[in-house]
Length: 482
Image 1 (cartoon, helix red, strand yellow):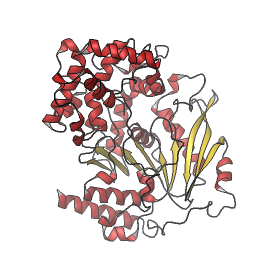
Image 2: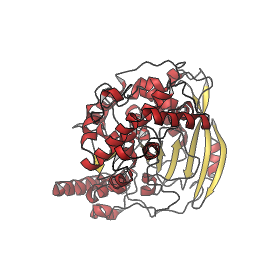
Image 3: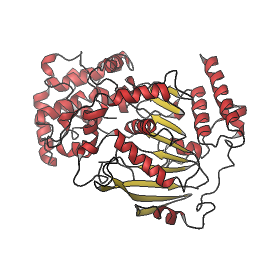
Image 4: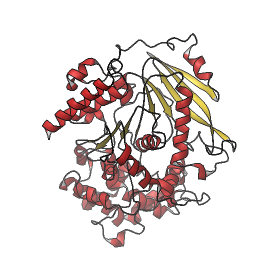
């Protein structure tokens, strides 16, 4: 297997080098500055785009960082039916460098940051806030216009607006729901990007068949760690009455309400049932030592603290759910959502089980599931993927149902980072896969150094690591969502 992977590594890089002789190898990274060949400052060029307006510019050494609003149609199929302001950020280095197009699938950060592919190619970064996440939400909101095609059209339109400024190669990327978003963008606009790097992207093709998650949770980590987690989860349901009294006091002290989910009891069970999944999504095997070793003899406070640390008792309140209404709407209309079972807990303790996304969206918003949406994307990736890289974490439950590439795919890969969770990345891959992934990203971006063709294991990020810009740890969000 190692020899085969090594041969693939050399062949892939050589093919890429030969096919782009004279163009793929970039000059050494240039110092940041105004757009090359243009007399206007980059700020002026950005603001000259019709519909683009400045929110603020923030300083960062070596870059220009802009927070912008861009006018988008609510319905790309009928542009005359209203517009909204979509938030976009630009981390500008130089128009002679490639550009990474990033979305996390939720809100966008207004603090300068650099995603892994941006560091690898030493390029610019455009980041998009997903439609209907505040403040990028039409008012009034027609929720029927929140779907994967409309979002892909948002991204396409931003790309077309910025392409005259950033004329070099573009690569789409995103993590989790953002990885899904990058994949959907490629499916609907396959000629826009020169490559896609999708991190930990779930792929729930058939929404009502989720046995892969049960199989995953039955073997992830070690038996000892699984037993500890299962015991704490069960104990939290056994002690439901005293812990719900504490939950009621906690909610009252913080002004939390439970109108959307329906009751404190439903919210409590939802938090507890997220516990095991949440541990593996965000934690590492070494973190098992923080889980009570004997749940039956642990105090109520120890059980509460463990569940709260991993799942978060604030999340299924109205106040915790509201920012994520767009996600749960999409999960209940197109994306699908996992349903798992709890063989280590007697049925008498589980009143509701995993609740559907409908329970987490206000009833005033109508929802209807579209079962054809995910199979369509899955078929397209298997048959038509080109220059696509999918990275998953070995211990991440979301990777139990993942994207795969088929015989029709070209120069596309699915890799798994050993021991990693929902924060899996290229840096965490085994050495040969890491080299291959880095080399392909550099090639797709048109900046692969000549040395990489001669020795693929020499592939390295072109920009030095910056502790402030290059965040590598997964962000802990206390909820079962991608």
